[in-house]
Image 1 (tube, rainbow, N blue to C red):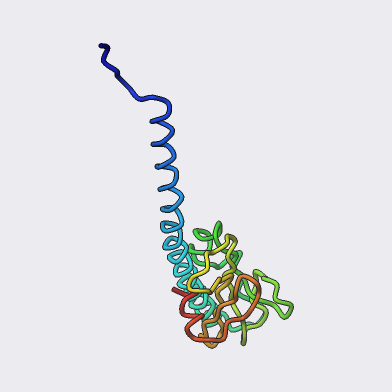
Image 2 (image 1 turned 120 degrees about the vertical axis):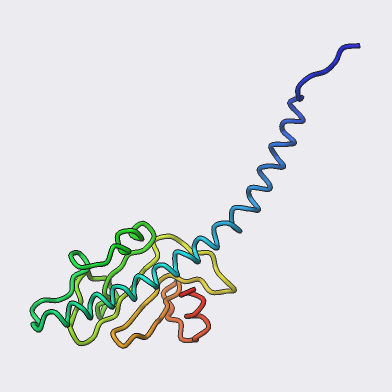
Length: 155
């Protein structure tokens, strides 16, 4: 009787099917915490930008020198630029690189990638106002008003 060595094609296909199924189950569980960390980083970056705006306004007494993300943004904006678009929201809801006014502004970090819904909440953007108020916008454009929804988007 001859000794059989190695695997048959059928055995290899069964193993590959099992590995592929396990990978399909594991990847979403791995990506969701990563997305959550990215949103937390974007929120922290919005706060850093707000601090940079305040420092800029304290250093310049003139209204003729608006804060510009293109020239004065912290390094976190560049680091997160593949996942988020940072800017100031104008009256039409579009992102602008310069602060519209010295007295009032609304920063936004808009996700460039889709985020898996977390407990029924799908976040599309984080906002931070000149008053220090945090906000969140859903992936379909709805503005979240509940503190719990905003907290989940920011964390």
